[in-house]
Length: 386
Image (cartoon, rainbow, N blue to C red; front, side, top):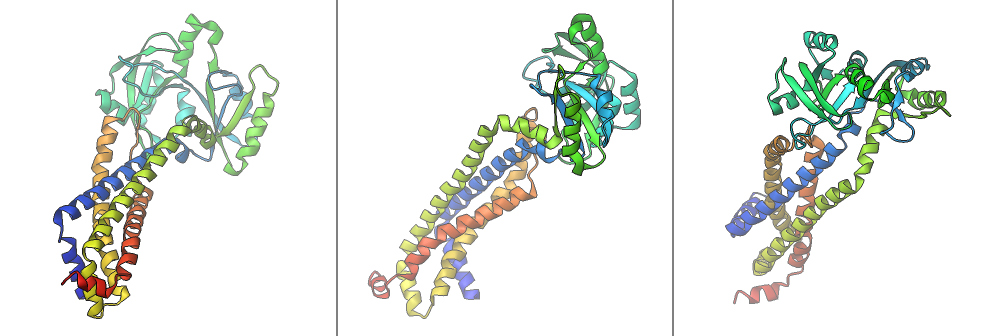
C-alpha cells in the first residue's frame, strides 16, 4: 500500500503544469457550482425561514389590491388566532432608484411581536413606538448608507407620492443567521394619516395581514375559517401560510431559478469531460508502464488504485481549493450585491454538494481510462519500450 501511494504521488507531479491546470479547473468548477447553489438557496430563503405559526391574509384578486383595516377585529375573533398585525408595501426610493431596499409601513407593536427574529433593544423599541414619524432599519441597511440613530431619512414615494421624512429610532439585528437585515419599517398610522389628506378614498386600507396562530397543525382550518368570513364581500381574501405566501413570489421567477440550476450542473459536466480527458491522456502515455507493472505481478486492483488514486487526489485537491475560495468570494458577492442578496451564506448542504460533485468528477474521470489500462496487452505495451 505504501509503495502504491508513493507511485501515485510521483505520477501526480510528472507533468506539473497539467496537474496544476487540472486542479485549478476543478477548483473553478466547484467554486462556480457552490456560488450558483447559494444563489438558489438565497432565492428560496424567504420560504425556508418562514414560520409555521404565521399566516398571511391578502386580497383574493391580487396583492396589489388592498383590504379594509377593519378586517383585523373579525380575524381576531376566529378560533385559534393568537394575534393579528398588518402592513403595506411602501415602495419608497432613497435618493436614487439604484438604492433599492424593501420598505414597509407596519402596525408596530403587533408586527414586532409576531417577528421575534427582529431583535431590537428595549429603549429603541419604546422610542419607535412613541414617535409616529420614526423608523427602524436593519443593521446591514444602516451600515450600507451610514445611518445612525437620530438621523433623518427621506424616501420618495412611488405608490404614495411625495417626499416622506423619517427619524431612525432603532437598528435591529437578526436573531438568526438567515434573518434579513436590509428592511426599512415605519408606522402605518403615519402613512394612513397622510393618505387621508391626499387620497382619502384609499385611507384605512392595508396591503396584508400577518396572523399568529396557536397551533400550526390547524393552519389550513384557520385559513378557511378566515376566508369564509369575507366570502361574497367587496374585498374577498386568501389566507395561506407564510411559507406558501413567500413561495408565490419565488414562483414568479421560477424560470430564472431553473436556468441557474441548469448552469450549475453544466459546469460540473464540463469539468467531468476535462478531467476525463486529462486522465485518458495520462493512461495513454503510461500504457507501456502498465504493461511492465503487469509483468512484475501488479494485479488489476493495483492498476485501479493507481488511476483512481491519482484522479481522486487531483480532483479533491481542486475541490478543497474551490470550497476554501467559496467563503471569501461569497463575502465579496454579498458586499457588492447586498441590495439583491441581503443574506448570502454558504450552507453546509452546499459544501456537501461540492464534495459529492468532486467525488463524481473523480469517479467519472477515472472509469474509462481504468478500463483501457486493464485491457492493455502486455506484449504490445512492452513492444513500445524496444
